[in-house]
Length: 149
Image (cartoon, rainbow, N blue to C red):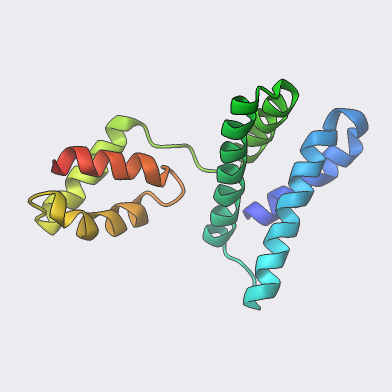
């Protein structure tokens, strides 16, 4: 079952749950609308990888909002953003642990023959491709910097 099909099924389930599934329903509807907008703009059906990219973008937006809500001490908005992130993470692949990420980064460094921080531009694109959807770009960048430095 593709991610889009899973979203459609979960939306039906949330609609049947009425009050209990309200937040979940609104999040799923918003994600499906964003997926549809991307499909319209690009004039093609999105693959699962493209849908994952849309989901990651949604999570990132909420994480950025969460930081701002924490600065403003808006407790009700913090709780809602955290719940929305959890709903979205259900559709993303499991994140890589630090150890797993280190293995991927060291493999790429060895394959590329990177010697220092100046080679970060060679390493980053390959690591990003191998970890697609399973690790945050900031986390990968920090790990690469650490291992090259």
